[in-house]
Amino acid sequence: MSLAIVFSRALVGIQAPLITVEVHLANGLPAFNLVGLPEASVREAKDRVRSALVNSGFEFPAKRITVNLAPADLPKEGGRFDLAIAIGIIAATYQLPPAQLHALELVGELALSGEIRPISGALPFTFACLEAKRSAILPFDNAAEAALIQGAQIIPAKQLLDVFHHIVGQKTLTYFQAKNVVQAPRYDTDLQDVVGQSSAKRALEIAAVGGHNLLFTGPPGTGKTMLASRLITILPPMNDAEALASAAIHSIVGKPVDPATWKQRPFRHPHHTSSAVALVGGGSIPRPGEISLAHHGVLFLDELPEFDRKVLDVLREPLESGMVSISRAARQAQFPASFQLVAAMNPSPTGSLQDGRSTSEQVLRYLNRISGPFLDRIDLQVDVPKLASNEFAEEVKNRGDSSEVVRQRVMQARQVQLKRAGKPNAQLGSKEVEKYCHLNQHDQLFLQSAVEKLGLSLRTYHRVLKVARSIADLQALKDVQRPHLAEALHYRAFDRMLAQLARN
Ligand SMILES: Nc1ncnc2c1ncn2[C@@H]1O[C@H](COP(=O)(O)OP(=O)(O)OP(=O)(O)O)[C@@H](O)[C@H]1O
Ligand SMILES: [Mg+2]
Image (tube, rainbow, N blue to C red; front, top):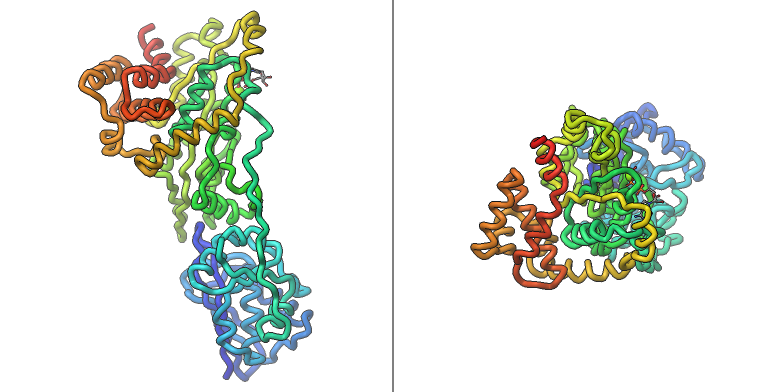
């Protein structure tokens, strides 16, 4: 009897749980059985593995072959186990030394020729190998991405035969040495592209400082889309842990991660016709959606009222928790989704409140497409007004600071927050708000009466305080003061618009 055990890993959410590939060869009628709840694609592995072995010059054993992928209750998809199964069969046939095998983990899909094809999720795989203190044998094309995991032992391979030679010590494969040089962030756009709109730019800077969600409202052609797309250019780059988490999500949807730019925050801009599944994730094998691809970055929803209200409402939960759970009949997966939301819209279905082309009833119906609880999660609501043509000529000279200059200010203010609370202001819980955004009695009364006048919720009260905290941080001030509160309250343009419509 000959038995071989080889290690590989599945992909569940952004986790890579261990899969033990057991291969047993017995005498009897030749057969090839794969057990352990494999799906159709794993069953196809039988044909690929058989051809790859034969075309690599191995004899396919004329025995009863049983391959078990354990644990049986884990879902397994794709061709990622091909390489481990093939090596398992070779190991059982030629009695390869178990000690060599057990220091390794293997993933890779096999071509019929024996060539090793890239897989998705190389990053979670490599990370798990590092934790298990085993070397990672993976497809050559995945090596650069895997090398983002510092300290991992990465052995890229192109051919099944090369892996065999490596294990028996005939011709060892070389460990991959990354020559990654992380570039300073570079963007094609700049805040200075936007003429005037200094107050909207100021709000954008405050949003960047505290990681606040922001909504631009205003008539057509005033620069809302331009401004929102430039938020990404003034945000601080991600730290190592954030960049890894973001890259892991991109890795499992098969989007290659570029080691040179991997610390730039992601910017996702889904169209308003996007389905709920595209936005939050899903599918029979749960896959992350736009909100997870925007993890630690920006999700931009342009023309907000054009999104299906139901679709927007499924964002409420992840907006609060920074996570999304996807349940399908048999499976469940959790994906991180801690993103900064920036949205833009016209204040009326015809574009402008002043054009006289829609009644207040029509405007209200239009604005009501965005539910109250969704709006509650937006910290800054900013009006982007139309410039008169003579003003535009004036303003062309007025372009404010470049993205680079603003980003430096943002990074300084972010440092203060991370030192104080370990997180950006937008993510402070209500206890932390009380602790870090302390007001004197007069200012407390001032804020309370302002909030009442606007008819705002308690959640909004806290949000205004957090925005005021970010404004104070921009000035490197220890305490939140009256002017900060007044400015934060100024960024409630949508609430004011609703209040005014209700009065009419
Ligand atoms: N402040 C500005 N500075 C420079 N260009 C501007 C400005 N505002 C508008 N533009 C010009 O107008 C075009 C439209 O701007 P943008 O798409 O940002 O408008 P918008 O406010 O999003 O309009 P809509 O409500 O129709 O979506 C830009 O491509 C740009 O050429
Ligand atoms: Mg626009």
